[in-house]
Amino acid sequence: MKKLLRPTYISGKLDPNYRRRQLLEVCLVIGVIALLLLAILNLFLFDALDLATLDAVGASIAASLWYLLKKRHLIELVSWLFTLMIGLLITTFLSLAAGNNNGYLWTALFPPFAFFLLGKNKGLWVTVVFFSIFTLQLYDTIFVQQAPHLTLGAFLNTIEVFVISILLYRFYEKTRTEANQLLHEQSIRLDKMAKTDKLTQLFNRQYLDSTLFSLYKERRSLPISILLLDVDLFKRINDEYGHLFGDEVLIKLAQRLSESVRGYDVVGRWGGEEFLIIAPNTSHLDAVELAERIRKRLNIKVNDAVTTSVSIGVSSTDRVKSPEELISQADRALYQAKSNGRNRVQSFVSAVESESRKVNNTV
Ligand SMILES: Nc1nc2c(ncn2[C@@H]2O[C@H](COP(=O)(O)OP(=O)(O)OP(=O)(O)O)[C@@H](O)[C@H]2O)c(=O)[nH]1
Image 1: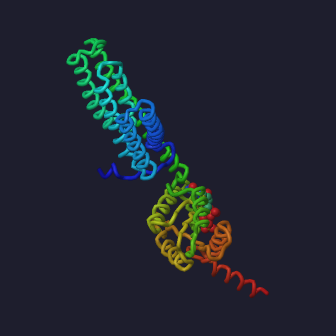
Image 2 (image 1 turned 180 degrees about the vertical axis):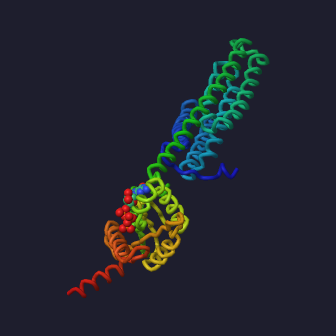
Image 3 (image 1 turned 30 degrees about the horizontal axis):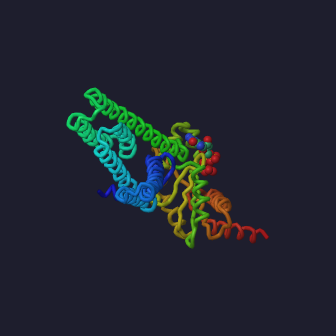
């Protein structure tokens, strides 16, 4: 019941509800227009008030379903009501028309709607129930009411077509759902690959760039801070223990790094042995504190001879005019941290102060 009343919103063409919604919308709009026209014809041309009333009721039901679909986004509920409505329409028509025409051909329309709108399992059960009712009606028409043009052969042929169409439509629906599912999983996998750095499994530079740009655009009163982090003397580790060992160290550092940040921080590999942390809604002081905590946690004893250390440059958006400037300030701070002896955090603000102090002393 909860699922029936849960609104679902329109997303891209990969959304399994996209085409269901389209089919329902088209059918309901056509239904409202056709039923209103029939009501007018029945009232003014054929003087049949009872049929005109029936048409008007049908048009109101179709319009209400359209409202539930378009304005309330209740696609599950509308799918069920629409399928049941079609089933009722056909059974009512069959019992009115009896065997006077080939009206039972309308039953062929039921499975495509039921399977497409309700899925392979619910569609199967609903179709079986309605086909059983149609079969009983047909039996009554042929053998009880002795319809003139229908024979035992017609009855058997119809049942055979019922069974085959149930099997075929279920097969098509299964194929369609599986293909959709596969596409969906592939698009998730591709999306992940496009964002991820292969070695460390952190976000890659492209993703960091685009995230920083969009966060910068949407920033509010609180600043965004970034931490640019570089592993110290990493070349020595590579030279002494080999590139593969260097890779393992990078993976270990990346793991520790992602464990050290808060859930809303974005961590990625900026390139080589450099990492970037984007800390949204974080003041410069808080970012420096965060950097200090990270620096301590990344002092990892990799083997008896090697303990890693990192240098970190910190900058914040309250002092910049663009994301590029934010990066360049963090880069300058990082450079200072390296020049001041490595294994330290350098805020851009104090980096500038110490640079200007140096200039003043020289003058
Ligand atoms: N194993 C491994 N090494 C890498 C990777 N990317 C970059 N490097 C190495 O990282 C080293 C970076 O060295 P440098 O830029 O000289 O800096 P450093 O030795 O870390 O010294 P400082 O930055 O000044 O502390 C180079 O030897 C690169 O080859 C990688 O994916 N795997």
